[in-house]
Length: 237
Image (cartoon, rainbow, N blue to C red; front, side, top):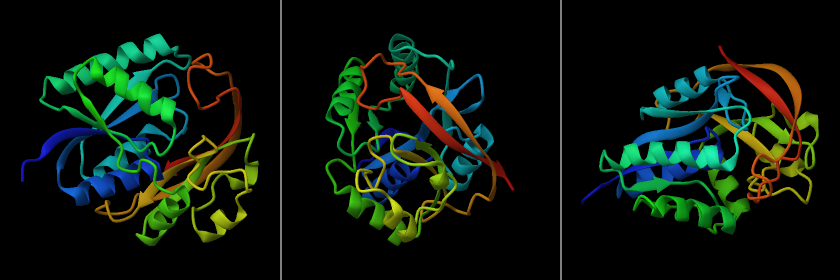
């Protein structure tokens, strides 16, 4: 079987982890790199707030190289597009023609990704697309993945959800208006163990802090950032 070289857009959370699991089982793709955007002011994963050293430990435990894209704290859509174009163009020069995403049902986000990649003749692949989010999160848990909630949007969830493990108890406590996978940006997670890991990433919980953001895309994204977020800091143990 011919394998197609690909890069997987990696947040460190459960959706990208489940996407990677499915792609590795699929065997059509050779995932050459995990690609993550980093806030260069705080040296943390963009939006998720996870320290870079945990991200690096995660990639090492999985066994796939990590590519980091450094972005300023305040980044407009033009800056983001320019940086991503250069990064993906570099991948294309390495004969990588597929970019994999963990998006599930945000149509405008998929269209945006596909249009940007088309400029480089790179295809986008969405292994979780249109799957039931309730089924996906249950599959994630049943497969033995372990994840901790690192960020919650105060519009949907209160501070008490930050730092919790994603399990049946967590799902049962989610309000009715919250997507089980947090697909609308309700919460973000850090996966520390599971079938794609050679060994768990050992961490300890730190402080829970609050930050407020204004939408950097000026309404060009379906994910609203004009809100406050509770972050649970994680540190390597």
